[in-house]
Length: 65
Image (tube, rainbow, N blue to C red):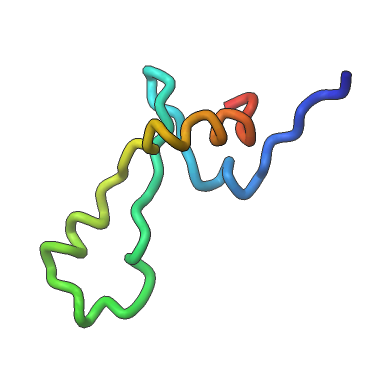
């Protein structure tokens, strides 16, 4: 059986925490920021843990991370 390949696009976007959970950045922070409030933009800076419903697929495309 050959080695599984890591999806490089996903590897650049996700990091693993000490407990094995996946961290991700939030969306909607790239452009059209003038209509968003400072509070919204501030909250978009924070990272978030990947939802439980997506973890199975994420572990499949990131086998060695």
